[in-house]
Length: 230
Image (tube, rainbow, N blue to C red; front, side):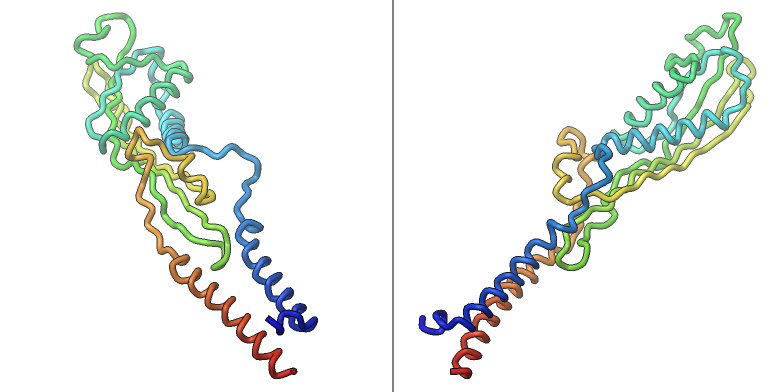
């Protein structure tokens, strides 16, 4: 092709191809790199929001336990995901020095000298969602907004008297943004609630054909521009 042997045309083609290469590199250049912190898995994000809710409940709980045993009783849940909150609640309460049990109070140690309480809890809402999947500008790297939420209502009941000595609730939400490329590594195949739907519009279906068409159009333009100069 004679027009490619022309020095001016080669310069134009080189500049055009360099521009294409720069545009292609932009997504990697502005890809979310993070701050160096460990990226939490979806399961760990649920644990984090659960711990935040449990700590708030314990902070607001009246200091009337006096070393008594607290019997934990779930009266409402939302499904398989409940156990994440429950495991965290057991660990947080034990770490705080609270004596806990899952045995029904009538079969427990209610006749001992220790006071006993029943902590009746309802998991009203608990979920992990991808709230947004988007790009930094139309050529940027794809990002995912994650949100984990838990909403819990509790009653603390004196087993001996049946009195409700305290009522509390906690609603916590944790959210962050991660690179789309990390989704497979943060999801857990074992638990469906750790793989929320990826509701997204794939711009690549429109952009890729337009990019190819743009390159072809640019080369055709360079060809006819060179012909007119000759």
